[in-house]
Amino acid sequence: MDIPFTIIKHFYLPAQQNIQVILFFKVKNSDLGFASITSDIEGQKKKQEKEDEAQSIFETTPNKLNAKANVFLQFNKLEDNIPGELVKEIYIPFNLEVDGVSYEPDKEEIYSIGYPIPPGDYLLSTAITSQNLEKIGTQYYELSLPNLVSFSGELDTTPIFSAKNIEQMSAPEAQVQIHKGFFTYSILQIEPNLENLFSPKDDLDLFFYILGAKPNEQGKFDIEINYEVCKGEAIQIRYQPQIYDSPLISQPLPMKKTVLIKSEEGEKKETRDLEPGSYTLSLKITDKISGNSITRTIDFEIKT
Image (cartoon, rainbow, N blue to C red; front, side, top):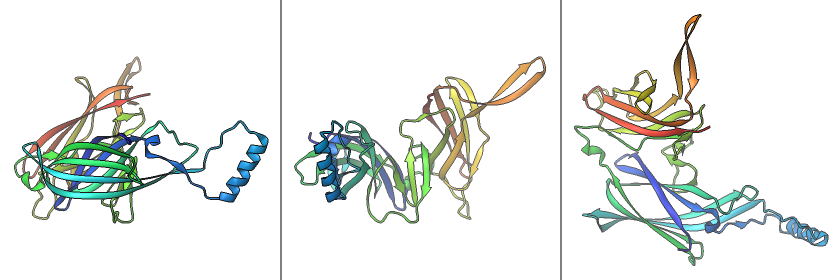
């Protein structure tokens, strides 16, 4: 394969009558064919002449590098594990500019693509080609997108993840774009923590959507979530129950535990960061209108 790449995971979120599927793929920088951008040809020429005269042993680095490629997506319905009806074909031009000083040819970067499609089971065929179509890489990926209407007597959630950063854009994107390190949803630009690796002073900043919750007559929801952080069987943090009037959840959780210190002077409580190690976050979600509930867990790790 001329352009090796891997689709590592996908998220999905509601998008009116469709589902916004967000695909994450990784590819090595050198396989995308980055080339230098010459913004000042004459200046570069003079600089090169001076370097030749001095017979410099130092290698110059371009200020900017650019990669141009084509990305093709094809969604086919999966019926009994057999590819069937073609639902959608998408072409996305890929034009990326990076700083030449920080460019690492052997580094694998993670990119995202988001697109709304109807619920269902799909075989996704993806191809990345060079701009002249001489080089190509292909991947096949199966995914299942739930029908939001079908959740009448139970709860579920979209994939639960923690965001490193969330910013609000002035308007939704008008066309499909490929992004490095983040994805967009409606008017939000979201940088996810895909590895679930954290530093001791980081927060868990959860983002997800609850499927199957029922609104009241005024269109408001009444959802309660109880969060706990455990290390093995031992509870490290138990948060106060949180109440939400919307099924779209964006919830920061500080990773601070309260410790009871006993001494000759008596007892006192201290707040401390979680120690490095592996942990599990438990979410007990209750729709107080329908009475339905569900529990979800997320494993994460704190490193020094």
